[in-house]
Length: 416
Ligand SMILES: [Zn+2]
Image (cartoon, rainbow, N blue to C red):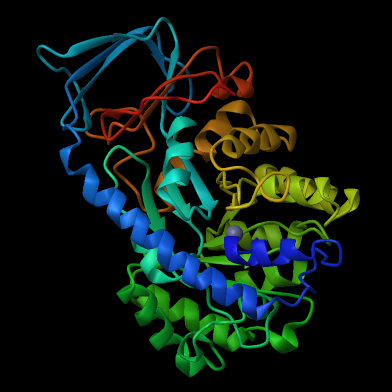
């Protein structure tokens, strides 16, 4: 929904703020957080520098496991890892007994906002092996999350595109003038800036109902055109019915969040299908907002109904949480909330297999990460070993036994 900084600022006066994003941020707090962001980045980089001695991925044979192949559980078998990838066989591999458990491809959170290495550790402990960071700031901080051996792989969008007076911009209060979009002519420069900062996709904000202060259709279209010209996908924040329409008209690749005012209807769903647009509903953030009173029950019903209809229409749904660096109950927690998201998706009508796909193969494919998402030779050895049967009960994904990231086992898995 918001970036983690915005949520933090919003939480300072949560009592007055509404989910409609009417709250205006506190510039002083934002500037302090900007400095804190640079300091966190400095610590992240020191941490990465200290990891140089991390041992290379060993050859491992995970025996006695049932692999989820993207559709079903295969009969008991062994999976081999060598050099950080899954291989058909590895001579002399160290044997790890899977004890009849289920081996999943490592989970992908398709919308989250980690800031520190500590957050990556929590992801790892929960079997989340890839984090798609749907906007982060400043770029120094985004980049400090990359390439930590043995920890989740991070992809980020950089700063989101928005206008000077949009709710998102005001909540930040400190966006450099060069990164504020006031006309379609600035779109190529904005996209180039994000690309230069290391972004692998572009995040655009569609806010409603007050379109007068947010990106107009022409500018939104231009941002998508510029992104696509640079082979970057576009994820669009669209948390109400009108904003989803704007996102679809602009041909964004991914619509993030779902409406809490009016559920997606046949007209919008037909456009998702015709354009191949993907949805990342982030029911977890709406469950959080419901719990803390930022939306009412009807708002959550609208979100839930939208997911039910997306699924029925055949729109690809990806699991994302919008987890932030805020204590519970103000944000979904890192890692464990992805397991909660799978449960919420099942409650909204996805089958358990569809829910598992939403956090593995579909999340990989639609984020152009073709080296992961399925347990098969040649893929990254991002693996999650659980006990129980997640097809019979999606909550079994919480029964984490072991986690490997690029073939390196993560010590200290979560007990959920
Ligand atoms: Zn977000």
